[in-house]
Length: 454
Image (cartoon, rainbow, N blue to C red):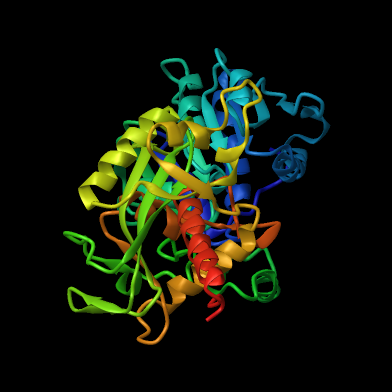
């Protein structure tokens, strides 16, 4: 090598982790995780030379550009002009025979271009941009090496983003940092290696902290996650400031009291999850020693047709199948199968079959449009009701602990980075959408009696 490479203490420690362990580089922003991926690729190339086949993945081509610049500097320092980069193919061919490909992985179509190919080291950066891990899991089938070439996966991510929940559950809370643990999905031994910008002496840390602060002035939870790398931060964060288990979660009810108005809130899906809630509106009453101010909403029960191993995938239920399950839930609670659903349910098919809402109606479940186009006002209504839960003089939104899909997804939903007033719809937002429709229905009712905004 022609020039020494300077590493932070975090990067040196990451390189000391034995290769038989897969590695998750987590923590705050600016900790040097991407450069660590580059150095790991370089070391693998030097160790295994022409047998080293390395794949670096990002969800978008724009993300690849940053790593391309990083590798140009790194490989240029080490190999000079002997390292060749094909910008059209996004491929490095190093003078020792090693091969490094920079690839995009966003959809199943992108996965197809890697099918049947072999790699010995897979690196994936910013995996928090993936709402679910299914595509990354599928890529493990491409890991194949000789008897003396170990295969390995190294992921990197910051807290926050659509994938916050599955990453934290799978890699962060399994064991203490730098301690090996068995990850059941991959059946591999992993280590969680955290870092923050404080660990990176190669940047102006004071200036970087100011930049992070200016990037999210109205989201203190996100700022804390970026600064400290704390994965307990609910940067599900769109609702982080307004949703608290202690205020919003209630024990399941045995029955809905007399005098409470009820309706359904439904978000339809087949390949995507289908979610339905029974909403009950308080007349101003006490249930199980908790007082619910007038016009408070309680999510009493939930029907979620969703795969257990992928919170963003449905069970393929048709409208009649879903309607049958909804009728059974409504019969249990002795409520009418009527309510609001997303506007897409009311679009005519153009083949004489009517709409999805028509199919529900024929199966005995009646929906009205929920004004889905009012997306941001709907989120604002929902946030206000969540924030006011527990106040004795204001209606709030309360959620039964039995609504497991709500609690598994809504607290972790991220903001849309391009439209911060909105939820990032690439994540599992189906429960949140259904609840939003239920909140909009409440406002429509109040408008009819001249009480909206009170």
